[in-house]
Image 1 (cartoon, rainbow, N blue to C red):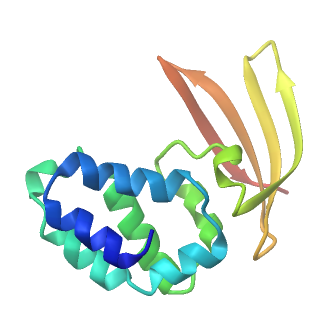
Image 2 (image 1 turned 180 degrees about the vertical axis):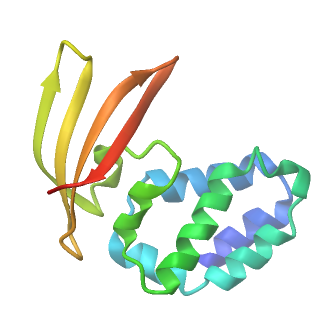
Length: 144
């Protein structure tokens, strides 16, 4: 998805389409190269977001997260910094950003532990996917 396609979606004004666009970018097929190229348009993306209804901010949470992330990338951050964002970022959703080095299942805790490394900067992370309410959440830490 390129910036022209993104702009068309924003111009529809349909918040569900806008949210799904952000979800697709954040969840499917991310790579360092793709996110870096998209970050070149971070100001344009932020401008498009500013034109949405401010009352939709809660519904458009992923769009705001994506906008913040693109701004960070355009300022030199690595795409792996997405692990710090308040969203469901399981290691398998980050295959173009992180390489999973080790994975362990803990049947007592009903959790999955992963040791991953960024494919670009080499930062290493550990994550733990745990049951939470009606779903799951992932807890991330820098690996030491």
